[in-house]
Image (cartoon, rainbow, N blue to C red; front, side, top):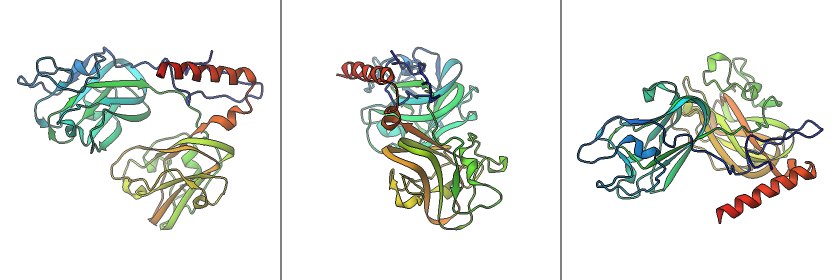
Length: 338
């Protein structure tokens, strides 16, 4: 049965059915039991780095039997796990302390790469806010390659986490790749198609990003060629400079080529840090056109836009054996979740 991410089938028409939207029953935490290190250890408050990869998600710190790692109070404390070899990272899930110290995690950065020095690796996410006490925080790294997954607090603080789980990137079909794209205007030859060429490079001068004129209400859109259910749109911003120019962008999905006449996925997105990718959840909106609108005066620059979904309307044309297999997987998943 097709209950694994890696197992796919193609039909006689040549269409590839992507199963990434089906929950992975065999998803494996590749950080579990792997070597880990941290910036310091407080002799008065024990808690070694390996406690974050021991499989115990208990969020309550007890110095007599700690379940969480614990550094000294210091500038830029860090933690990392060594996965043994370079792997493509999909998600990192961090389990925070559930007592009065949960706010220490506020502003964390996640890095993935092949350097043991955490901050020398590419940034997965930066300055992530932690304003409420949540059991866990999940960040997406969009297939960044690396042997080391590191977390750093860019401030003076004690650093604690009770568990860190790392999951490999699952292959998904980018519906926007290579599809026709247009935008409200073009400067410097930075055409709309650069955002669907498969190149996520955030350096504009590598000819990998779009660029509109400076004006009010800039927009960009891609024509998927057919109507799809859209689950998520990931927008990759410039990394060389000017990242905040994207602040307040809105993603729309629908059947109208006029971007703002379609349904918005989420409210205006805040862009306050030099983060590479911004995932926007569209929660099953259906449409042929995916557009991005900047409702302020400025210029719109996009280094890549990836669209994920397909779902029901793609499966309706699938052969019976494929639909039966998909249903079988969902039934198993539901029974395991009860």
